[in-house]
Image (cartoon, rainbow, N blue to C red; front, top):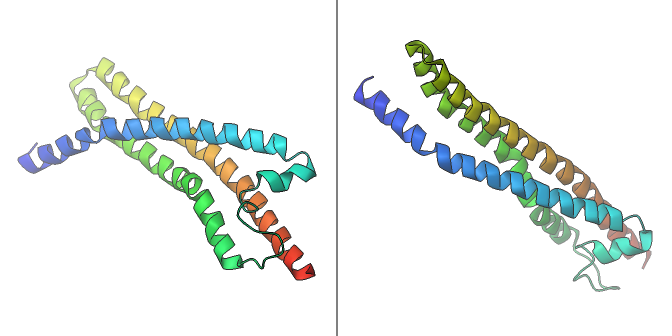
Length: 162
């Protein structure tokens, strides 16, 4: 390898550990979000409790006109961590897959099958964990967005009645 290729390879290797740590963080966040989602879904079984648990109703005085644009911005802000997790986890999984492939291919060329296996285990484990994280957060994001938009619609409908 020439010096430029070697430098690029070393730079890429430096990013493997941080990317794997971020993927593990996203995995933990996905399960925390899933737990909060399950609790909220359980609480939403009773129609009378829906208002009490919905963040849109908090800070919205009854009888005062609501600003739909401000509420939509609030919804986007509430959903932003889920959205970021859903979109970045697969990309980071791909990065964590590609970095170990270079040493695996070099080891394959040298006939060192043990090193190939070690590198491929890291590569595929990282992408699987990243995709599981993205799938969980996508599910939570989709349903929670529907819940929040339904609550916004309910608030707007109530205001129209007044």
